[in-house]
Length: 269
Image (cartoon, rainbow, N blue to C red):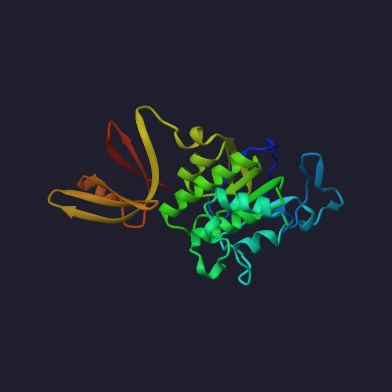
């Protein structure tokens, strides 16, 4: 797959990268970090990171990178993990305070929960005060409650340090809460650059909402049928008539929409 991207990002902004699996989201972050080769130009502020016959190595790029798997040093406690990057104890203490980790600074990673580990990884990524913070679905492995708490921490840190941030995410609510703009990728191309509100709150006619999900089961109840649809972490029941029930099957990807509070299903091809 070719990745063809041309973007101009505002310094200090928070940008979400969205799109289907395989659209090039993580590849884009790895190219910005210098972890994958590509042709083209990358400039951050007045510094050129990539150009014709020029490639700045990853260790010289002013970035912070947070992955799904934390990548903490198990033989170092929380504070030592941060100070390994830069010997700035005042900054480390401030980051730990902002993310509610001060009481855990002497603990080792194997004694922390997943959410606590990801907070440490986020703090460590900001220790160099990077020009660019790259977040590759850092919250996807966490349960919804912890995920929401971490979103709040990310937003707090972004407002405090004003670091230009690119975050890969599949979660519309996460993107809506955190990002100022969204880059929508499709098969390696930029399909759209817009705001979360315009992307996720589009309406057609009298339609009130439209959410994508998957049919888990279709249940027969007297003379009606009920489609059980998984949407994110929730299950939604939608009433079908006999004719509609014949059109849908378990495993179908569908769009759940509503007009005047009466949900309807539309099969996604």
